[in-house]
Image (cartoon, rainbow, N blue to C red; front, side):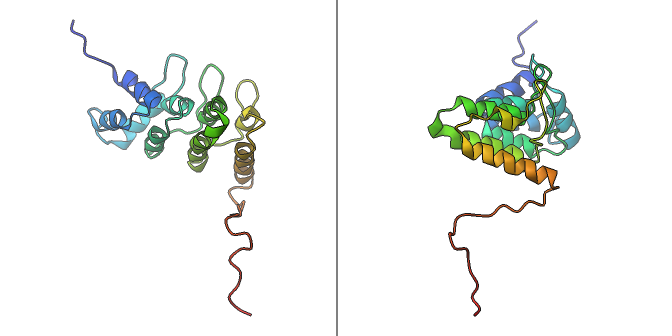
Length: 177
């Protein structure tokens, strides 16, 4: 029997590890998926690596921002699934990725965490060690800790938390007297 190349599962995991948007796009547009939302969601939600990590977990673990963006754009993707070994969500994996970066690269890791939080990942979910993503943050990374605290408050309050923008020190002010 001739070697037919990598399976769709292998291609998906490779795209997630390497931030390969071309491979992911080809995979999602090819038969049997062919841009069909339900089969794509089922494929993304049920395909795992040998350790039970989904495509979102793998992409978050490797900091594959563009692939995460593509996957999160797919209708019906499960964003809070927990992998089998440690019970981590993709947000736990993103925090671990950020911790592996040098201090000068924390902003890159923060972007990976932010895209997941913005997509609605729940930062309150605990893994098998009973840890929330915030409890995994490097203590020196105060910005990431603050972002996750804000996300937790927003989820707890049902999204009613107002985050103030510090770009303007005195605010826009009023034009009236």
